[in-house]
Length: 160
Image (tube, rainbow, N blue to C red):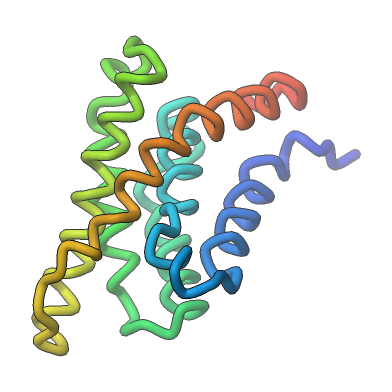
């Protein structure tokens, strides 16, 4: 049995998103770091909901917790909740234009960050700062380009 590249496209894009999530950036730019893992999971859960679902989001969040050194389960819960909301409405969201999807992805990213803040606030009593939500805007701006790039990969490797 020959292993085809299409079997690894989803895993490779999630792995690349995790690398981009932990890549060192200057302190000024790190404040605006987009949610790479959330964007990639959002695309795949809208495009192939039978292959990428809440379980994949949970495992990706678990890996993110280990890579970022946060309390185990913080990113698991935040990614799982965000992907669940997206997966519950994927048929409706597929019909929106890419720019309308960017707004929805922004709302999902704000949900993701608010869940992260809420859990971290319960654990460490950190105060809320508006700067926690700057990645929402960069994620919204990033969505159309990631959408087109991942759609090209999906069609090129005929991932189903």
